[in-house]
Amino acid sequence: MDKELIISTTDEGVQIALLEDKQLVELHKEAHDSKIQVGDVYIGKVRKIMPGLNAAFVDVGEDKDGFMHYLDLGLDYKSVDKYLRLAMNGDASARTLKDFKIEPVMEKNGNLNDVLKVGQLVLTQVAKEPISTKGPKLTGDISFAGRYLVLTPFGNSVAISQKIKGKEERGRLRRLMQSIKPENFSIIVRTIAEGKDVAELDTDLRQLMNRWQSMTDRLKRINGPQKLVSEVGAASAIIRDALNDDFSTVYVDNEDTYNEVRDYIASIAPDKADIVKHYKMETPIFEQFGVLRDIRRAFGRIVTIRSGVYLYVEHTEAMHVIDVNSGNHFKAGTGQEDTALQVNLESAKEIVRQMRLRDLGGIVIIDFVDMQKAEHRKQLYEYVCSEMKRDKARHTVLPLSKFGLMQITRQRVRPAVEVEVQEKCPLCEGTGTIKSSFMVVDEIESNLRYLSTSQNERRLTVIAHPYVYAYLTKGFRSIRRKWARQYRMRLSVKPSEQLGLIEYKFINAQGDEISL
Image 1 (cartoon, rainbow, N blue to C red):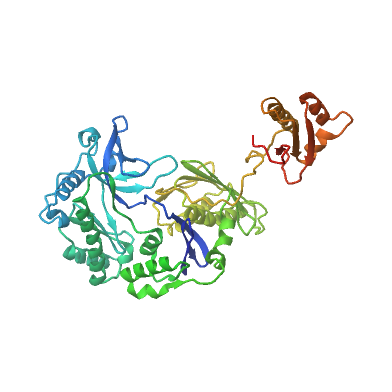
Image 2: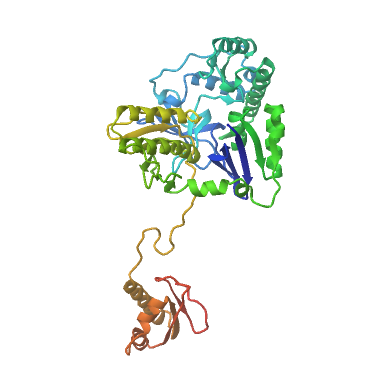
């Protein structure tokens, strides 16, 4: 599979598109003023404890307070709190945790009031970014992710990714990491570390330890809530997690971003630094590589598939619903059941792509076309599971229910990606209906009465849509004449095709528009 990363930099921020075999599968946006990212480490202050929720709101120095449940503190919170006090007092042992005595683990069903107090400083990491009106979700389990390893303090274990299947390779990696692992740190070996030699793994481990030690040094000067460690940018995070031999090219249209990405790749995979290319053509980079075309086709309430099948995609704050419609599907099978299976399989591939592309999280309910045969329902379930293997977000796929619905839960750490492909009508505000023309006329008369009695205007011109103009002026005793006589003014009405049906303007004697 050929993978390409297209990075576009604008005044608002950075947009990153991941292409697999020339097809857009992921789209990420990172605003220049983005403050909170998953993985950021903060020193926070407990602002409020909610006994009923067994949780606390924590001030991290940003616009919204973070939320931390007792279960989010982590089993090693007592060790984290002890480390925090040592680091803030400048104890040198906090930098390496050498000879650090790890405290007993927390009770799983404890009470937050027994652990945290209002005004207490806590070391936290962002587990979920702010979504809608909710602030970030915080955790006390601190970890640092590298290209090959994940470093977690206050432990002494080595865990190997379950996707590394070879028994000998798992044993090799375990022995290797146990030999170079720092004291009182646990290591998680990532899938991409399979087959890597000790030098590459040791380099990655040293970079992670440097991040830990720089955080410890900053704690000496802390006097209130603030960010300690920033996670790498979205582009670097994608490269870190997905960079492999399938990656052919990374195109960047901004020189500063190009240098940043190239330096990052050179630091984690020197042999791959040359895949970063600086795009200098006049045509916008997203347009040149067809990303803009794919965005227009893929986002929106209705998503059309080439075979004639189409999807309805609806969103709520906690759930996403996708309805599969066969439309004018032209690949006829041997019968209705076979056609339904074809439609569902084609839809499933696009649905999995849509979930990655829009970064849908939480619960996703899919209403597939009804199928009667159990083997077809099983085939569809297995196909969805196989397609979801490409998705790095944690997920669970449930078999079709008796109503033909499939439920997928997908890890939600960021707001879903939204691209506006439709504009709201300025007249109806998206409702599909507008005021009656009679209501518009009543509104014009009400404003006319105000201008004549309260503002003492004696000469006015009303500019309105030609339909309203005709309604006001036609006939021997027109409405315009009636108003002019009733309000004792010189009143004229002029048509304008530039105005909508319910839009109008008042012009005074000096030719200036009156703002109402």
